[in-house]
Amino acid sequence: MTTTLKEKLLTSCPIKKNHQNSFMNISCHSEFGKIHSLLIKRAPAAFISDAHIQQYWQQLNYLGKPSLAGAVEEYNSFESVLRQHADTIYHLPEDGSVNMDSIYCRDASIATNAGMIICNMGKAARMNEPAAEQKAFEANNIKILGSITAPGTLEGGDVAWLDENTLAVGHTYRTNEEGIRQLKALLNPIGVDVIVAALPHYKGPSDVFHLMSILSPVDKDLAVVYSPLMPIAVRDLLMARGYQFVEVPDEEFDSMGCNVLALAPRVCLMADGNPITKAALEKAGCKVIVYTGTEISVKGGGGPTCLTRPIYRYTPQT
Image (cartoon, rainbow, N blue to C red):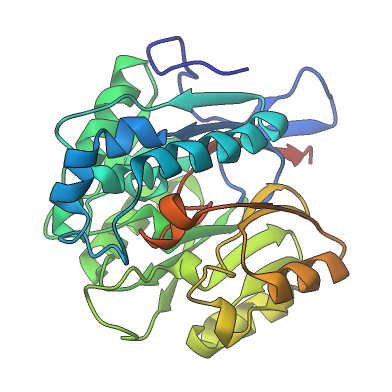
């Protein structure tokens, strides 16, 4: 099923029973459960025109100028995979207040079982994206839990659910201490423990470097990781929780081998061009689907997790 945000959307994100399967719930607190519903922004709505791309691609630090026609073709194929695995897909509309980076819609909000958290972007050129998403949420009666406000910054690519009650957040150039403090203030009262992962400088403030650049959970006990940039404390924590790792080699980090979207437990979607990581995932028992992402992923530095804002996922009933 596909609909737009102009049509009726879920009113909030509490855990609800899936009436098709009495053994399953739906929850926002998962990175690997089968996707029930998610939000995306199609390439034509984000890239808009060749003139828009020409205006923004360099100032947004893209690696190359995207082709609009190529981006549309790639995105159509990308979305066709999502259609096969998600019950419902919602689309953000074209919005003149934001630029082409808005295709990476995960970053502007966080889905929780108590409502959406509206982020405050660490990248100045993306400052209007959270307000644009909040406007769409409110227009469709989607509950808002709260917002991250200045001087706090927080981006959705810096957070990853480890389990129903544990959220990891990266302290990065995009997410600062004050943003993390505000996040804890919103989540601790609803029983969520927020674990902070201090990430390294790497290529500096202008680079796209989030927690999910080095960590993609694809099952309750399996994660794709890039260990050279992973904090030891986070690695130790995951190992203590029983996680096994699919290690991304150096030569596949820049091609986003570590940015893997779980469509369901051990059903993975990743950008083409990462054969070593793909083979390692398959050896771990995963089904791997690849998409061509030269225009929509590689040039802008945003893989499949960046291109999607999952809302609900199916989780086992406890």
